Image (cartoon, rainbow, N blue to C red):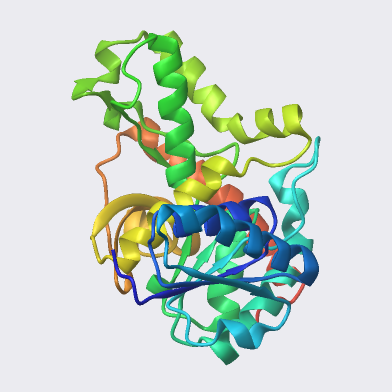
Length: 317
């Protein structure tokens, strides 16, 4: 893992702080900066994380501030800042608030770290990723939304629980937007190489798909706030793939330009992650049912994007 790299995290809430903790514990980069409007809390978390990781031999420098100049020369900037999802609140409800927050953050990132790769985590994820790309006028490979890894990990967990075995051996694949119209792909899911369709009935698979689609809302219902351990781990996997130039394949939210037949919209698809961000988009062969589901997911995101356009978020061409 590259030790000379700098990662900045905008938002020192549960997700942002957990990303910082795991990056430092895994010694994934040389420096981490957390930026948060509530500076005292962010500084306290940075100090706490530093003291937690020191006995592990971590040489990662961790700091926090409310001043964006501290993100200068970052290799990766992660955006977790935004309004959290509350019980009964859909991801769509977050759109206008978090779009404005993201636009303001990107303006600062472009000033202090114009060459950074940006990873978006705030919801509604796909629309926020689109906002970041357009607000910063980025090449599409430089802004990547974290969603598919998280959704896939949820599906893997539900598969293991249903089977009662295979923990740590399940590989699940989820495409589409990060919401109720995501597209779990049982045809591309397996347990140690054994196809999921050979292990579970159609009814059982449908149950897992439904639980996966509502996995985030379930956690909100229990805790009163969004998940953070799983989202943070998913983000760290993306960061490490980029910093190490591993060219690993992960499902991520990216701007489509003809892939799967769609243009000028963001949705979750398998991508190759490397030092330049998205190195390549992988186009899986989809059957008619999967194509229909993906079209529905794209349409859901496009509805949000149209709302943003009506609110004049993007310059009129």
